[in-house]
Image (cartoon, rainbow, N blue to C red; front, top):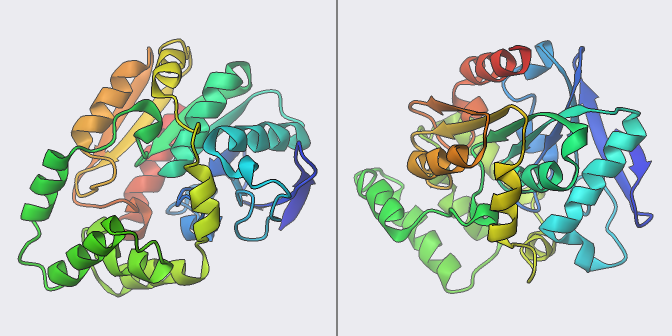
Length: 280
């Protein structure tokens, strides 16, 4: 992996794959190494993917000051990566919690963003997190699944304070539409990819000021793709629609029959839709 020095001297790593115009790709988790993104269903056949390991994850170094794990501070790493790449304007994609970083970057450095892609975005940063009614509807539709009891028990343990990676993986069948061997392997890989203290830092006090970010998004005068999936409890379609309404120039795509990691379950559709938006 290639490396660069960020604003505070922390050495960060990124991998490049594919040819063509660059697309900076920001991982979610938060606190998960970017390898879980794979190639976003083969998007590297259309673009040069520049996939960043957020500080403290994957091959990137741990910072001296854990304050810099905060969501709004990670925006600065994206800007330092852009400068390192020698690009004036770059397209940016954020998945899940990475979408929160991507939106923060668009707010703070709008002149350096071409197109903004929000792939099954986490919505806390703009105050649109799923409500209890969203979860109730989602869980009710899955009550007959063989994994339902163990997964929902893991959710309950999480609510009681169990933030272990093992418990996260135990709940992960909820994030896929099909709990087949491929999905299970993708989920189990998190055991070696996720770091609790990095996730804790991402969500630290002061990281989220939804009103400010929402106002900034209404002024973001560039093309935006909000990519929602019908079987995703993290990014309910109705909430993603509210997110899309914040932007002056947003397109929303709804991917039927897949969950929070759509490239795992239907890679061809993901790469096709992302490429279509980027090339438009």
